[in-house]
Amino acid sequence: MSENNRDRDTVRETDRTTIITDGGRDRGGSGGIIAAVVLLLVALVVGYLFLGGGLNRAADKTGVNVNVAAPNVRLPDVNVKVPDKIEVPNVKVESTSNSSK
Figure 1 (cartoon, rainbow, N blue to C red):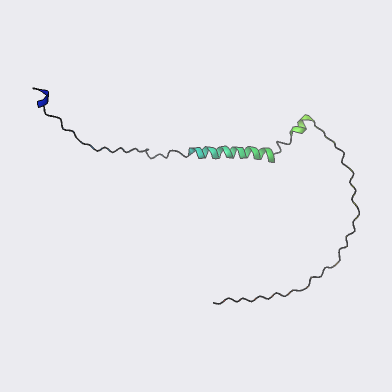
Figure 2: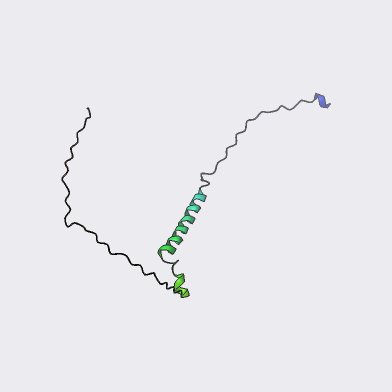
């Protein structure tokens, strides 16, 4: 038998479809949750430091005592005359509408 007389194999055409599933799990979105937790923790720490007075206690521990002499400021005497009774005139307001129905 020679090579040329041999029956050739028929080529089968096949269609392939690939389906990728995630198994019902939702992937992604955890970065937003992590960022929200970090921002919440930062807000809590900043709130504690400002509202709890944690930032103002450094001078108490080191014994800082600052006395500054304030300048003597003298204001002139001002006599403002305010009337005992203030009369407000009666005002009558009338309005008319020109709308057509």
